[in-house]
Image 1: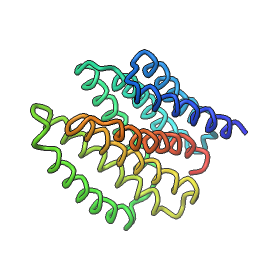
Image 2 (image 1 turned 180 degrees about the vertical axis):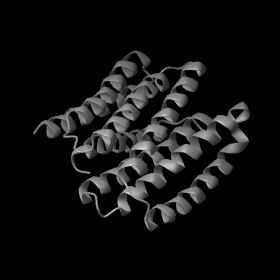
Image 3 (image 1 turned 90 degrees about the vertical axis):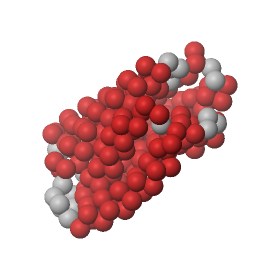
Image 4 (image 1 turned 60 degrees about the horizontal axis):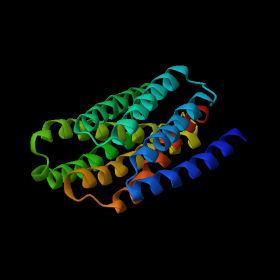
Length: 216
């Protein structure tokens, strides 16, 4: 019941975030987006934790993403860089949680190859527009690619619960593809459609990850 209430409240807040994004209203966007991101952090805390170490790393990653969300809602370039670093560290904690809870398997290697190819294509697409941020963006793409490979490793580990494995995979890939829209908006063409498509994918990914500890 609690998870249902969280989902309903999150959907309402997401509608508010998209409304304020459309109107470019920072005064409304920052608190609404911050509250929505705080909800996925609290949702993870409210789940059962049969693997406390996995949960601990995952929750720390969610907390760093919460910080990143607030920073990205601000217009300053320094805030964007701080947000990028927060998400980078959040991905590192996701990587550790995925690799700690699962065993190596064929799915991991297949996923690593496919996502590495996808990431190389995205970086090649973005590179001419990155300027002095090429190094930071390359590092970010590298880490999120490892994160998605880790989620494939979780998906392929049959010793874990199937619902949790699927949620980890959906959550990390939703995060991965939402970042493509963030990059397009930041470096190529700033359009509301980037947020209209990217934000629901991002929050779906984060909430699915937040619900995963009790089902893994």
